Amino acid sequence: MVKTALKISNLAMLLLLFCVGMTGCKKFTEEAYDNRAQIESADQYAKVLVNAYPVRHDLFTDILTDDYDFHAQLAQASNISAYLPMYLWKDDYPDNINTGPAVAYAGFYSKIYYANLVTEGIDAATGSPEQKAAVKGEALLIRAYCHFILVNLFGQHYNTATAAKDLGIPLVTEINKGNINFYHRNTVKQVYDQVEKDATDGLALLQKGGSYVPANPYHFSIASANAFLSRIKLYKGEWDESVKYADAVIAEKGRIVRNLAADLVFQQSNGLPFFAARYMDPASHPNLLMLSYVTNLSPITPTGFSICGFFPSDSIVPLYQPAGTSDLRRRVFTAVGTVIDRRLIAIKYGTQPNSPNNTPIKTPYFSMEEVLLNHAEALLRSTNGNAVAGALADVEAIRKERYVPYMSLDPAITKQALLDIILLERRKEFVNEGLRWYDVKRLGLRVEHRTSRGGPPADVLNASDLRKALQIPRLEQERNVPIASELNPR
Image (cartoon, rainbow, N blue to C red; front, side, top):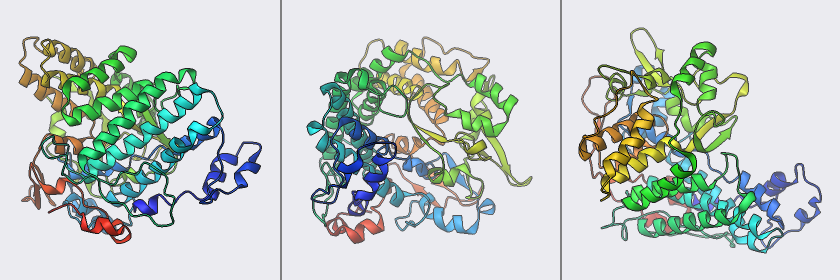
C-alpha cells in the first residue's frame, strides 16, 4: 500500500488542486517524466501543502485501549464484523471499512507523497528565500508527522535498547520515479532519526520564514512544531529535550487552556449539536494545530456513533466522578442507548448528534493541554531540581479549569504521587482524541477487553505484548513483495 498510496502523482489531481482560481494554467499541461504537472513557484508549492495534511486516521486506536468497552447488544451486525477484530487486537482485521490500520497506512503515505513533492522541488522554485524556507519547513514537518504516526502504529514503542533492530515502517523521502517500486521496512531507530531530522530542520526553516510562516492553526507554526518535537522527545524518553521544546511553546503561548466552564454554558444555551461543533474550534480554544474537513467522518466511526457498540469503559467513566468535587469533563459525555442498556459517548466532533448546517468537523493534532502535560511529565522524570514546582504549575493550570470546586494540590506532594496525577489527567483530558493507545504502549500498560459487561476477558493485551505493533495491512503484504517477509512477529 506504500506503493499504491504513492501513486497519486497523476496530472489530473494536481491540475484540480492548482488550476481552480488561478491564472496561467498552461504550464500545468506540460508533462514531466512521470506525467506530473510542472510547479514552478513557491506560491504553487504552498498550495500543494493545503492538501498534504493527513486526516487523523489513528483515532480508531481508541478502541484498542482501556478507554473503551464493547457492547454487542448496541451494535449493528455489520459493525461487529468490521471493528470487533481490532478491539481484540487481531491481525486479520478488515481493510475495506471506514477506518482502521489499512486506511491509516494508505492515508498517511499518500500525504507523504505531497510533502516529498514539495521538498524535492521548492529549492528551484521562484519566490523569496524566506517564502521557500517557510514552505519547505512546513513540508518537512508534515512528512515527519506522517512517518511518526506510522511508526507508532506499526512498530513497537521506541526502546533505546532495541530500537536499532525493532521493525519500523518504510521510510519514503523521495518521489517514486519508477512505475514499480518496492520498499523494505526500516528500523524504529532509523525512522525516529529521520523524523527528528525532518522536524528539527523544518522548525529551523520556519524560523527563517518570517511573515510567510502560516498564522492560522491549520498549518504548522513555530509553536506547533515545538509541540510536535516535545511529543517526539517524550516518546523517546529524552526528558530534558522534551522540556526544552515544551518550554518554547509555553514561552510563546503561556499556560492557557480550554475554559470548559464557558463551553458548558454554551452547551446549555445552544444544545449538544452546536456544542459539539464548537468544541474543537481554534477561534475559542488553545489548539495549536488542527485539521478541518466537512464530509469525512470516517476516522471517528467506531466511537463517534452509537451503532458500533464501543463506549467509554467502566474503568474510565468513574474517574470523572472524584470525591468532594465535580469534574466538568464528565459533561462532555452524553447518554445513548436504551433504558436498560444506557451508555455514554464523548461529544467532541459534532457527530452525535449530527453537526448543524454541515459545520466542518475539526480534529486536533496538538493542543496546549498536551504541551503542559508533556512538560510536567518530562520534568518529573528528569533530574531537574525544581521539577515538582514546575510540574505543579502545568497541571494546576488545567485542573483550575476542570474541577468545581477547585482544590489545589499539596505543594509538598512527592514526585511519584504527582506523576500519577499527571498521567490520570492525561487520560481524562484526551479521551476519544487518539492519544491513549500511544500511552498504553509507552507506559507498558495491560489492557483487558470484554465482549459483554461483567463477563470474563475475551482477550488480554499484556505489558510487553507483541500485538502492540499493529500488523502490516494485507494489501501491503500482497503488493509490496519485500514486506511480506518483514511482518511483525507474534
